[in-house]
Image 1: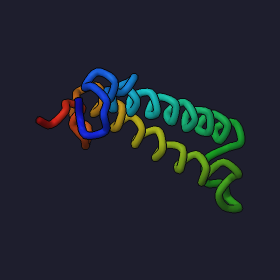
Image 2: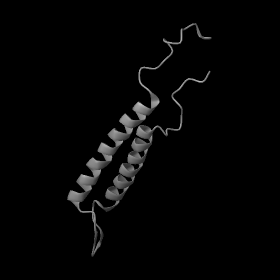
Image 3: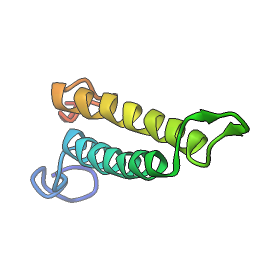
Image 4: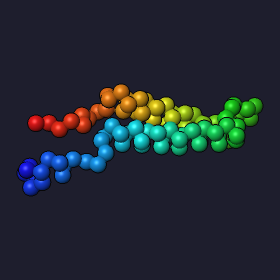
Length: 88
């Protein structure tokens, strides 16, 4: 038993940190991809009169997709910020 009165098996989480990071990163990627698509339909280029309606949301969504892709790859490769193994 540990200090809280629970045995080691009871104190383990249901899902690992790396799996949860991968799931959240995939959801954020889908969120960003949705905005990329919608911004593409609105127009994301620079027109004669200035930026079109989807210009800024398109590039912000690209940054979101890029960041979530990096987190997803790091979670799959096991290079997360925290270690899932218990310290003894």
